[in-house]
Length: 175
Image (cartoon, rainbow, N blue to C red; front, side):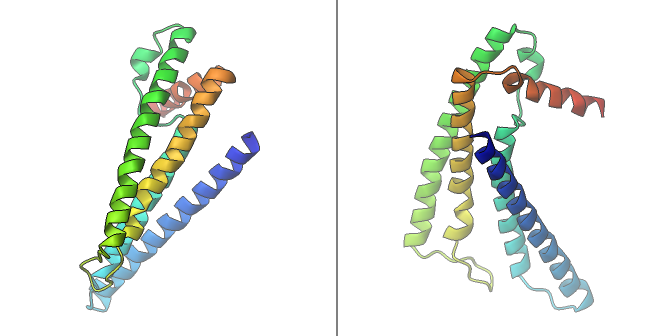
């Protein structure tokens, strides 16, 4: 399982890098076209937004694995370890339900746009269901990550499952 998750992390980070690099390339192209060639296009901004949204939803999934999402660490670290574990399980369940609900509605939005053949307003006329697909894809990946986290918290508990985020937040405060 750990090898699978490690490979999953590598693939996600690679895809985030590709999406980010594509967005950066789009920014350079749009800037060059607007200020050097004096011929601005309306589609690069659209592609840049799609790439950034896709990267954000993929990055959100990898943050679940590293326990890097926002948490009330100031309050939680005051409790004993067994209470922290219960709170971590509660957090995972709430996050799992939230991601599942957003996944459900995201699929509905994608299907609605696909069936209506909605296109963007720019000259690109891009099918909108494709960028909207990043919402259910990211939420599906986060749902899977929270299921893994919940399984680990319940059946394969290690202190690092809880302490990892707290240590990361302390390092962030120091630097």
